[in-house]
Image (cartoon, rainbow, N blue to C red; front, side, top):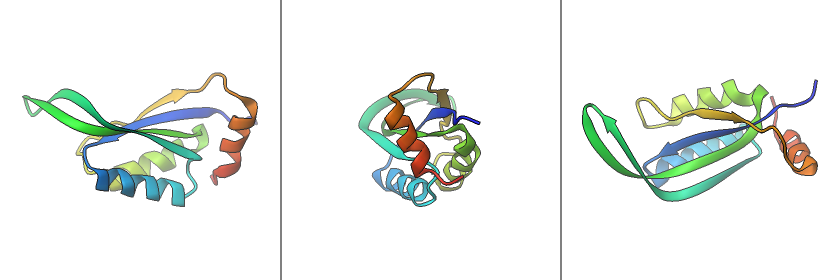
Length: 107
């Protein structure tokens, strides 16, 4: 069966937390790469109050076989009560890059 590639998004408001998450995901070989967009601004309501946070957005490159493992790690180490965990299917991509992703992951 051919690998299905996905991009998982999550964000957190501390450098310490994003570093912990990245370390756990990469050491578990559940993803090939994590790109980080630093200090973006997020606006949302939580507990009926408008929140304005600076957050780090993590773009996690992996396969669909690793989704549950990644979700479990995020739920264990993420500091948010309800963390953002969103997955997008990658329909197309440079074949050598996608093969590299597969080669870096242990399911």
